[in-house]
Image 1 (spheres, one colour):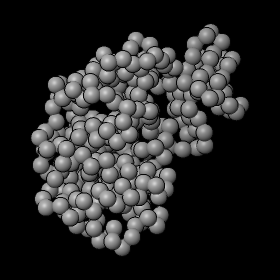
Image 2 (image 1 turned 45 degrees about the vertical axis):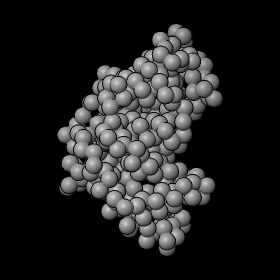
Image 3 (image 1 turned 30 degrees about the horizontal axis):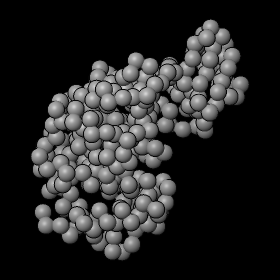
Image 4 (image 1 turned 90 degrees about the vertical axis):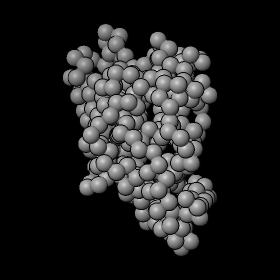
Amino acid sequence: MNKDLRSELESILGEPIVGTLPISGRVQTRSGRQFFLKSGAVSKTYRCEAVGLTELASAGELATPKVIGAGDRYILTEYIEQRCGDREFFEDFGRRLARMHRHSAGQFGFREDNFIGLSHQINIAEGVECKDWAQFYINKRLRYQFRLAERNGYVSRRMAAEFFHFEDKVVKLLNEAKESPSLIHGDLWSGNFLCGADGKVVLIDPAVYYGHREAELAMTHLFGGFPQAFYDAYMRENPLQTGWQRRESLYRLYHLMNHLNLFGRSYLPEVEYIISEYASARI
């Protein structure tokens, strides 16, 4: 930790920092209080993360680490003591997430753009996108990532042609499920939640916006780590609309394209497969 950052943090905390564990991010002050510090090069990601954590906590259903401070080079939060989650943990998690998804807003998107991983996530809805989820999702999620993939050299002529037909199918499928905008974490995989010392879930590293809750559940399926007890509890509390399975791969596609653009060609076959399958489907 450099001298300027230490000085800024000590000013916020009101006492000297006496110990740091860079691998775990733990920071300890003279009085014994512990905090979690994420820091690095100048970036907007830290302030965006702070806003997202606060927004999730505002719903009053799922905990997030309390934000102590955030700047261009860091975010400082409370330190979460962890334990292993059991079946009851995941059942409670599913119920609470279902209730959080009832927390709504007047339009899709969010008041500011943020990040999903290190990728920009465009949240400012324009025109019909404010009320039309299909148009928001096509324009601000899939088309944005597709154009980035084109610039990165991942899009073949065939893939470009299929994406043209694919877009029409997406609109029809997404319009099958009409719901109000739901508050969603936005990047909910097994690495972005903790089990706190009280046995309750704590959400971290959000990519918050107001969207369709099916997008959230699709992300939980993408990389695994959520047992059936989680989904059963969710569906009892706030069931998804009929036909959600037909739409799930459309929501997985956003994250797969983001991983393609961040990490490279290993994700390209699955991206191509999903686009091709929907482009050729009779809908």
